Length: 398
Ligand SMILES: Cc1ncc(COP(=O)(O)O)c(C=O)c1O
View 1 (cartoon, rainbow, N blue to C red):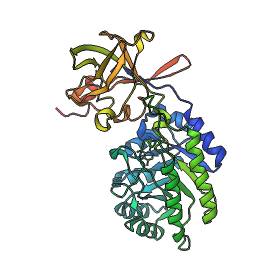
View 2: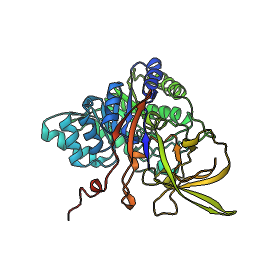
View 3: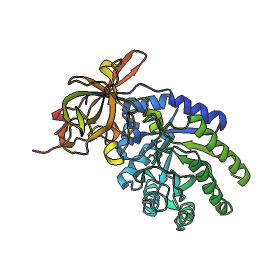
View 4: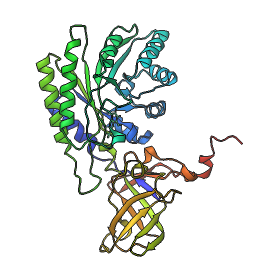
């Protein structure tokens, strides 16, 4: 793969404005799983966003970039004791607890350190957000969150409120991603807030309320996403109304966009190599990247557009399939797309490649992961150099 160019999108500010003007006590926490490295984490902090991390590695990047720890939310369904210790030692704001085991381990770790740790609980509200089955997370059959339906959520809330060294300050849910509809958010807010009223008398403090992330972006022209303003309108309207009706006041509303911050900002560039024409069947155009730098088409059947970047004004001419260079027949980035006549050496650009492409990249076939260039207003700077063969052997022991 040639490189991924990540210009700094204006979406961070748009999220802040759209949520902040409608619901001033809100925070946008960038979901770093979409893609993070120190340069991106710095921008996130400069833009005044919080950070959602799901591993010690993401937390280490946040620390390397001096992200204020009190703006960090630590998610994940199986944080290790070492990761929890790291988080407590860094003084991170909230740990979003996802299992009974984690509640116990975290309580013990906080006790050993003589500290009290603020936590949130991730609930599973049993709502289908109509995403790909591999990216839906709010339904009953999910590894994430305490299920409302099974009674686990009630048990976890009571256990968290009585934990010796933990302060339950908020509730989180995340339905999946990308979510192209507004109704799942509205339903989620309604179901979860209504559910929580029964715990008010028992002392539940809802200082923070988070309906997660999952805001969709445009990958292909035929599936436009809602505007950020529309998501903001739905979520803030339902949160304000229900919190007022149910007596929860105005908790801090935390939304966690990931792909909608970096997705459209990333354009993947590939160089064309071999071309194989199978008359009446298919014409394969092979690229110098593929599933190692963007696994989404292979695992989710995700669709992308592509353009011939080296000759943008060339007229459309034929239907081709853009294949990767990895040793898998399923390594196809874009199937059956109309393109101009493509030649070896041409550059193909695939837009909307900023999220869950570099962050899910692998060294399969021992191909190095691509360089990443940040670009804005005609300036460009490298924020990740291309991986070398030596890099790929760095952890190996001879
Ligand atoms: C808890 C949580 N928050 C936020 C996100 C971000 O989703 P997206 O990048 O689609 O906005 C995810 C994605 O898996 C998530 O699990």
